[in-house]
Image 1 (cartoon, rainbow, N blue to C red):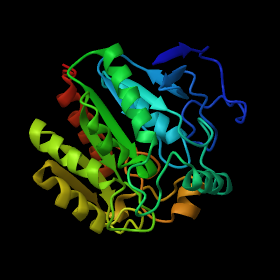
Image 2: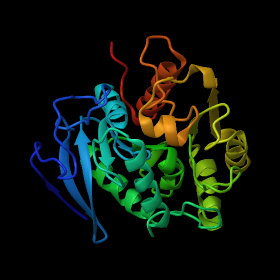
Image 3: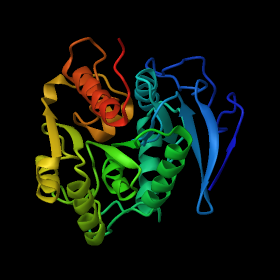
Image 4: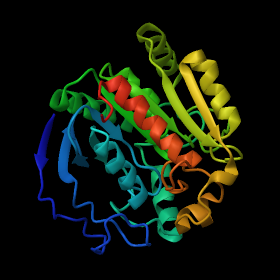
Length: 295
């Protein structure tokens, strides 16, 4: 396993450079406050954006990629005293989520050998690479272990990453896979048994969030998690009416419902239910990774 660092001002060629930092005004995010690295795990290389210090958290992007909202959540983790490892798994890094471009990314991911988007596919092969990234992050950052946060398409990856012993704080946000089975879980039978065994043996807790009436992550999916994990699964549901009503075009026109609790559908206002969810996730990670609260 090897890594190389690249200049912080290196940007993907596919994206027009913009001067916006967080992309909330419809522009791309240059991600220039992250260190861009190329990480090799088992001969497979991927770009990973790293920022912060302290125990590590692997933050996986949601569809259609590392959007400005995903990067914003990564910055909140960094500000909480965590070192964020944000791997590029699909899409254009830092791009504002447009509808047409986002749909193209989804179509490519659904036929990619790295992902198992549909029922019966079992665990996505990319999770093996992500477990290797978690091992590297733990070696570099130390601490009691690594956090893993999955979002939407990558939501369940945070659970299957617990097959890596370094992962001790999984957060499963609005997991959308398998796309064709609202009551299914994106995990093979052997891996499911191994994950359930590790959760019980090591006393892990799994934190999860979804909006009510989310057609991509239904109550039936949360029921399947509870059937697998029992009381170790802490699934929390927010009222659909609390979601941001003006998300980026991909979420407005393609997703079409309240879905992304701490990214596109978060309302950044003190005391708002989505901000409380964000703070609960940060508290879950910092507590399990041994980060002292400010003050």
